[in-house]
Length: 361
Image (cartoon, rainbow, N blue to C red; front, side, top):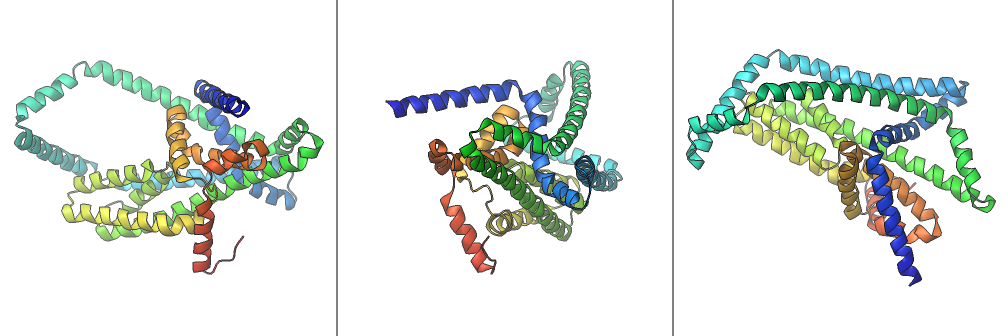
């Protein structure tokens, strides 16, 4: 009976947490991004402090380095988009031809004449001016909201880095003296798991850029570097990201006038890269740092998307990894840590390390 009562309490706490996360998403999403990025930049900030910089300057330089890295990536994408836009009129004409072919296919397969299709499209466009105005206003509001969120995230990153000792001491004051070593270990392991996961993911994305770039260039996709970068960046969104990037590349391959061989080439490139990523890069580079059961990995991504949208999908895995660290070091929560963990991941990681002659950590 007592065990059942504890389970019910845990479920109620979980449901309450989900409700709070959903209601407070506009506040918590930028704050969580700030905390995760601060954990990522903390080793670099500590390195700068060991070189003689004070806490404020090291935090600012770390943030500036990250900001310049992101700006450089955006400029690279802008440069590649510029090359694609030079042939925009040609691309638009090819998209129009592709649309005409699609209408002919619908006519031949479903018996819907071209005029009937145009009438359906016309009905869908009724009230188009009002809808367009609403979409334009929504786009402006979304852009302003995004800019505000970006500024907030940067501010939060700096503050988390600058006051990290203060926050650590606060947590230690909440626990009993005999539990302070465990609390310190939990904080260290949680930040370490986040750093290793994001760093490994970044290295894997760079390698995906290289592989996609080579593959798309061989296939003959114009703007191969842009689409390689796009497919790699979308890898940040688990499961859905790589499929979305490849779908866009296939569509553009059609629009560029590519024949079926080019499309097959894109799909073959995607299959080879995904095979390499799943069976080589992820075990070897990312290394299952968060050590999560695949079932709960998928589940937390679905829950994250339901609560916080795309931001929830991006943050889901590192947050669940930190939660697992907490469970692994607190006795009543250890069964839950075992449940969401993946014991075979350690064996797989060890096998890859032995195969490639890498020493164990």
